[in-house]
Image 1 (cartoon, rainbow, N blue to C red):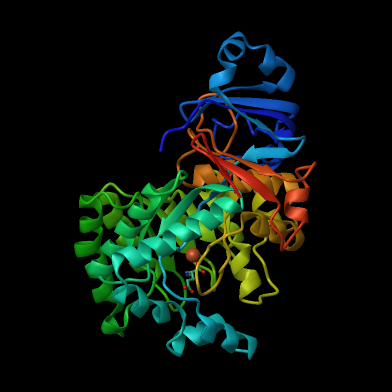
Image 2 (cartoon, rainbow, N blue to C red; image 1 turned 120 degrees about the vertical axis):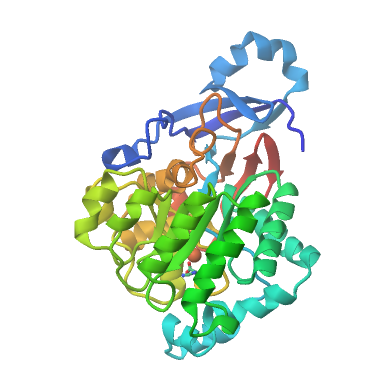
Length: 422
Ligand code: NIG
Ligand code: FE
């Protein structure tokens, strides 16, 4: 996919988030959106070359000479912001889990459903049986849906195959779908999502096979950048997670984890692995916050999961922000706990239930998501030299993005310089 020279003009509010190279945003810097009004962006070769006012852009001598070659988009005073970086998704699955959904409505909780054979394990068979082409189609459609909601960079996990063969297949599917999409996909190996049925009661043996067989194969085929573990009650223990992180490190893969979704795990022992991100974070000990704040590890909240599981409790974002922890927001798109591709929905939940301000939610969904994927040199802000990834919203004020909920106000995304109408 090749991008043509592109000029966006008449942007009512351009949320640039410029000046983002010093580290993830924390504390008061989370709210500094660096907005330019009546703005323009010029892109060449899929990258931003200049950002300023529409008036200045139209005076540019290069542009005057080359105007005919440039695709011009009139943003009609709408809001433009960096494309969302959805740093936590599980798109490789075949079916919605409607039985789980109805059981929860009838009063069962996530753990009870998992213990009764539902949950993650209920998604394994579909993935194991599915052909690569059919799975690729499903992931490609999900990526398109994400782009329609303003997302231009997506982290995508395996984790419903849970055998060497079907985990490799899932990661190959992510790679094949990514090649068909103009946006950017970061693959993550999540072999330690659940203990598959054939290893029932032999969790340690499964972890040994994740470390000795799966991680080396994934690394050799360069199918993932990150290794993730679901570390929690009923999933993998802190010791098992540490064993997996060590194997990942030995194979040159970076680390992220599901932590504190259902119960508290002490975080400090994991920080020596320099995880890019720890996600969910509903249950976190106060004593871990200073070390987390002193690190570049991002705490990624996924309030879509709290919403869909019908929880009244949400991650305590203010506690983290006030302690100086870098925070991000993601959808956690998956069939069990968060079947949504909408970053604006995650942001709306963060504002209403976690008391993040709209400005904080935007930074958490863009530049800090990029930090959580170690992509902040290319993604998450609108600055010369960065990839041309934007979302155009049919609103006049950036605060409307998390304000309108249950509807999609995104009207255009630009991914690596390629515009895609919603
Ligand atoms: O992030 N907690 C673990 N993994 C997913 C849920 C996956 C599923 O239920 O299928 C999550 O919420
Ligand atoms: Fe998840």
